[in-house]
Length: 445
Image (tube, helix red, strand yellow):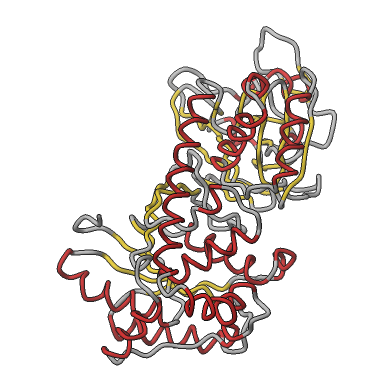
């Protein structure tokens, strides 16, 4: 499954699971010319976090494997709970890396625990599928991605998320580690059964094993059955939405044309494609109701798990809650090909073009800055037409209201020169054959 010459990034915690996977990959890499590297995420939660990072650094140095240690701040996400926040930050850190494959050391016991936790939370078929062995994922390239994790959208970078040990029990990994005299670190929080996963691991599963010794294999098989059913439901959703899915939007008319069960299935499929967390069943039903009853071009918004669902001009959208940013926001552009704007939750790209976009020569007249709308801004896209207000332009181009306040505007001096996705002020447009630059705005998932 991993072609010769592939680049493989290992998520290395320093625990026995990831140490065993590192040992396996390190032995196999020369045979297949794999380019192996590792990433350790330093959460700073435990007093031992620094020692774990040092252990991973020494281990990779002995193996001659490049290691990156990334420090993350869990504080802004504490409302999700320590486990969930740490997981989001780990996934976001992995999503920023460039590799053909990202290898994680989840094993059979992890799979069983995940399935039981999902069932106890009332998860549907998708959640009960637990973790796949391999998953093709998409992610955006910005380095300031703030814990949004991995998405299933149309982003430019694609990677395979791989779990090679998913069919191996924890006891087998421990036996392998002891056989090869491997060293690893122990996370003291793994003994704290206040965490739901640890409660299952230490209190419930040992009892289950006494009565059902093969429970690992049978529950993992159930997870595979759920995954097959989830795949069939996704195929049904695609059949129910021919031509209705457009990148980040879904035609509400398709939801209205379906019965409630199939409508919910299509909405679930759409939400998952955007990389959003799945809302609770009652919230999903209310979301479907509001979307189907939204009137004409009116805007409607619903909030769930740090994300929002909205309806505008007959289309449904699902998106991360936009960051709050002052209208005084101002960043200077100095000719970079890409300008990351974490305050606005995205990256502004500048593509060199000929005879299109902004005239590079005219941009030399004054400092070029990125700002937000403050009110009363106007733009003239065509010398033969009148000057238009931003509100008119936003409505004409179908920009939902919730995107407008955080849409970056490009100013040359005090003149609004361009709006990404809408157009360029006629006085700043590049002439035929002239060197130009086309701004393009991409929001982070």
